[in-house]
Length: 284
Ligand code: SF4
Image (cartoon, rainbow, N blue to C red; front, side, top):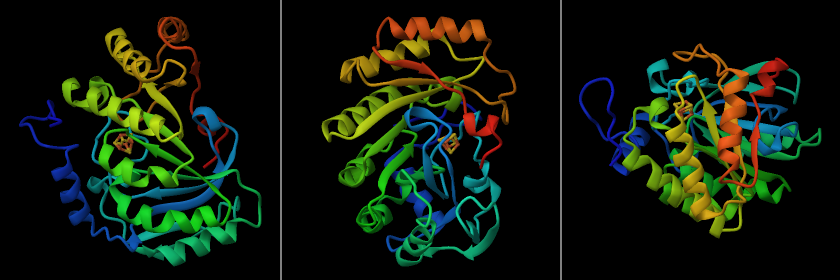
């Protein structure tokens, strides 16, 4: 169980039971999905930085990170009755479509975007694995279009990942330190390790991404590098300096980033520092 330590009484956020409650609360169905937005842009993070992608942002998340830059995906912002849909890829012109959206309608939007070349489709959120039943139903249609599938996830819903894994080409797995989530480390780290193990054994291209805040500790970095090394020390780890957002307004200093990169590189073979470049370029 992942107990939340902050904000008073413990609860079960992050557990299977909590996830089922979230799905019920959001009205999520296997044949349709509640989305926040769909658009085409350039991937600004991780190992596919610079690649053109179609982004599908799902609604709902089982975490509440201090640095969350997608608060519109959280139920505290209200359940979205409509989804923002970019009309033409790269146009920045949006219409609204009522939620929930059927698999067929969503595939139709993606097909429209393919008038321009895209490397892959990014399924992001929120936590997309809350919608694993829909993804199992829908992703075969996307792969049939020749698009690679890239999943951005908080890396905790192991069973849901296993259901979707055969349909994925890339997994960007966040590593969530306790200072960012308030989750108990004894619940988080074993789940992250099981998640990474499952993705690796399936032959998916996977990497870890850890947002570095001013409060990230060396012990947290060591825990992250240790769990990756136990699976495979060649798995890339992206250290992503936080973009000031929400409760996180202080960036890590350049010297701190160098120090953390050196420290992680003692354990892992491929450590990179990459900020959110799309925000630097004012892309979507
Ligand atoms: S996992 Fe992602 S979407 Fe969910 S709260 Fe954390 S940063 Fe926000």
